[in-house]
Length: 164
Image (cartoon, rainbow, N blue to C red; front, side, top):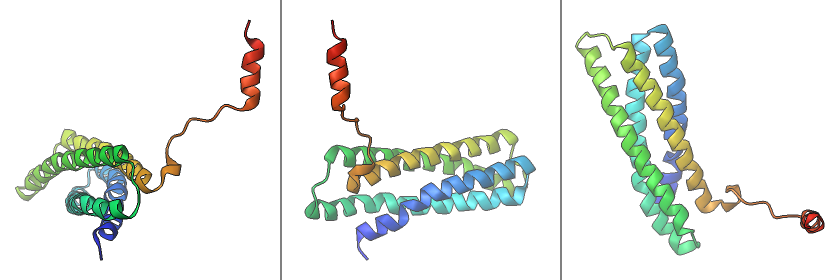
């Protein structure tokens, strides 16, 4: 298995995982379920490990693709910056989640504000992972990008008629 295959297998986990965990964290917050909160915290740490593999397999996948196809450097660089920011944001979120786990191990209750912070952070990270994934998709699939519609001939003719 090469780096491009590893990258493609692992990049989807942070996106789907964070969106799914957002729902589970919301349920744990609404129902004040300590067990579900602990499970979600451990799952988020697992998603972070897989996201780390995805991040570090990216440059190797890029080197492989660079020799085979012509890539838009700006798209690749922006994707890399977004992915790095997502990974660092997830590490910060993991610190808050780790604190919640330690509180649970010590028999303390996780405060409601901390649960809300974890929920909001997970939703934010999921959104940023989705943006990074979109830009990653643009590397090999430029047809999904934003494009300006070309003016039609009738629109050009209308603008010439309406000019004084």
